[in-house]
Image (cartoon, rainbow, N blue to C red; front, side, top):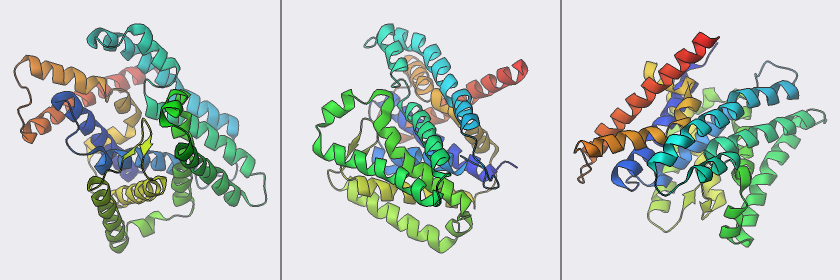
Length: 326
């Protein structure tokens, strides 16, 4: 049975990401700071992916089946969608050629988050496979998920950022950071922790942690940017990411069912593929008809609603076309 509350949580993550892109394309800058919601939405999405990674009732893990699932479910759509979007993007953006756009597809930077998620899920599946053969599978799974995060934190402490950004093919550095969040999500389901996360006192504590971190980051020069990686404190990002993910999932257990958010969460990958192109197209159209940004945030809200409705219509059309082919 499908967990509609998890779909709502993923839907809310997409709302956050679409709002960011709407602000950037419509106003030319991010108005709500990135660190206030975007990193939480991205890491919550990874956490939820870990939550859904395996069925808790399953006693065996089929590595081949899981890798094929990742290939069909995310990897092939990545190449199909990003290649299809590459042509109109090259025509609209004067600063990017078609060759550069297609190169970004091949190197995994056409959609950095999905590229990193693909690589992270493949690595996580391999880790689960080999950990399951040991006497203490959970212990080794924890170690193999935690060490990569610590490795990236150490590397970014000692190695120049410019060199690391230039060598981040298929966003492997982001992928290694995601492993720990996949593990946390999977353990949350395996140990049935959602019943605890949705308790009001736990949600209040998580909210206080998040508010404190946001105040610290926004009142100082600290950054928690995921891509390109510009993180002042990896330990702070870890606490912020895990607390934010648990807060989002826990709060969504109390929300009433919402058809739009459930549809968004269920088809979140399609939404993510068009989260850049749709805001760009809608904002260009609005600017041409004279509805340009003049410093009032209500204009951003109106634009966001138009962007999200447009993305929903496109996603609905894609899902209907896929269902007809079947």
